[in-house]
Length: 304
Image (cartoon, rainbow, N blue to C red):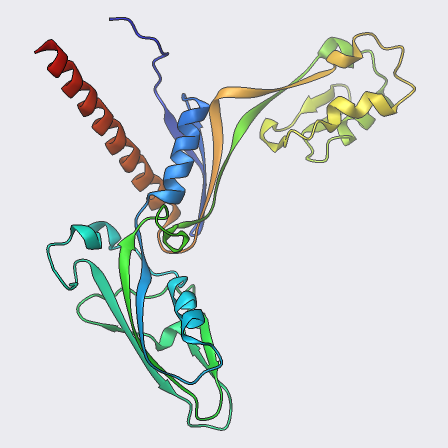
């Protein structure tokens, strides 16, 4: 058997990890695999979101459909989503604690002042204790403002699903990657420039990729600051004092790495960012195992 592909050993190196975002380096793979991982993080990591709303009383300024839409976009802590069933896969007929989370709200404004109804007014019914995401004790999402003698009473059901079904189940606010830039300076051409010209060249980069150092000339401070704006390549076009420098077009080169990618993933708060990455990798492995199993089945069928 002959391989028609280059065998790879992908590796991940975490560059930055905070409560709400992660930045990591993916090495040893190609562009299609990197983009596949990005799409899985957006569309296939399961989370919880409110899907059904039964409104008993609503005398607020928002009509029922508008209010239901707002409820669906509330970020819910989805740590337990992995252990829950998708509604279509659950053995129950009418819904249970293994496939849904029930919330209730009953608020009436009896004062003369306006009253905000927030996510902290939601009450979790049943055994589940999955709450909306709050960053601190004073943080809450305003659902609607009640005027004098206005009231709101409803029952809402949250279910497990994925972003491919609806955007409210997407666990990330940002999931992007940059192809790792490779910036190289042609030292032979750079040495033909005067000190003032080198300083001007270093300043041409808005991302501060280059730095002028006395007795050393222009150096590359950090390749990954490059945003491919190409200002350094256009630098000589606007200057008349460098026309006599030979091979000036080869002064600097910017290339894209073929196997290294820098990911930035920002969570909506429903899952820790590192958990989103881990689950995405598990989902991707599962898909590859399904493909491998299908191929083996076809081979056995033809060999039999």
